Amino acid sequence: MRKYLPAAAIVLLSLAACHNATKPDQSSADSTTHTDTTAQTDSLPAPYATKSSKNYSNVLGWHEGNTPVAPQGLTVTAFATDLKNPRWMYVLPNGDVLVAESSTHDDVGKKVKDAVSGRAGSGNFGNSADRITLLRDNDRDGIPEVRTTFLKELNQPFGMLLLDKTFYVANTDGILQFSYKNGDTVISGQGKKILDLPAGGYNNHWTRNIISNVAGNKIYVSVGSGSNNAEHGMENEQRRANILVINTDGSGEKIYASGLRNPVGMDWAPGTQTLWTAVNERDELGDELVPDYLTSVKEGGFYGWPYSYWGQHPDPTMEGKQQPELVNKAIVPDLSLGAHTASLGLAFYKGKALPEKYRNGAFIGQHGSWNRSTLSGYKVVFVPFKNGNPAGQPEDFLTGFIADADKSEVYGRPVGIAVATDGALLVADDAGNTIWRVK
Image (cartoon, rainbow, N blue to C red):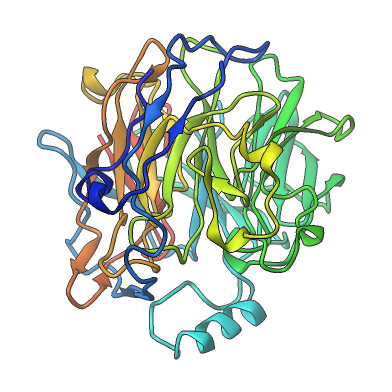
């Protein structure tokens, strides 16, 4: 299988200290076998080939009649507006769309905002809504007739999951379960906490996503690092930068994969038993380092953080702290999504409403850069798949979020991706406080 790198990295080939890296075999009980494990010569630039930049976007919000732009033949409409930081979505079997409205807590957000000189719109700061909103579109016309607060008084909720009659919510500090029956528009009560999770640390990595296996007897939990690159010590990174796996009652916790700085979106490639994740990589090594990526996840695999990146590239900030035995086995990701794009959302398209070319491919929400001299991300990209593997480079799917690149002005920032029961693609725009619908 080819390992795809961004065009920008190829342009900087003359700056690169090229390395060879072999990706270990991907076969395991929970994954398909990848036949191409040959060595790759990459073209990443050297660390600090360009200086580390701070270029925060200023969010303008959407004007009436203004929407993101989809490929010709598809229509973009606002499925829901006037939300408060709609970050993630989950579609229930009956078609109800659940939206996790949450953001950085006010005390942390204020510190970050002050640190960037209080630039308006540089982030989503303020009190987190800490709720899940339900949207019900009974006649499937793209306009929800029902809107309720499904769950409230949560703690930065993000991932959601329904297994039989049990509804799970991943708060930043743990997983809760609630009783659910089909058609419920409101859930009350405190729920039962089945797993504690490490909270605090690097404010951008508070999100916790969850997904089950096909059998419905395991839950996979993504937990981002508590730092950019372990600058506070590895003792503060326990159970972090991992995908964990647990039983549905919270027992039997194991580390499924490690060295993943901030794995957020997770999904199963159609027709396979392979888990894929979108990973938000480290900052402050230059404009083109380190590429965010989409990768298949090998059980027991190590993906480099914090000691190396993109396989065996040693991180210069870890000099004197390296773990050579870990670096030597670091897995090369499958596909680059560009440096500093903040690639977070991930959903394989299993619907039929969009054109044939999109079926079984992956849609990825790119929240957008702050650590790059020119804006990157701020769009939804599509990755074609064939036989369970990427079959080409990422291509733009939903654009128009950037209002003026020279002024670093944007209308919104896409994050979560979901597929509605009618096959429409839903995109959560947390800065624009909107759920977009593409069909």
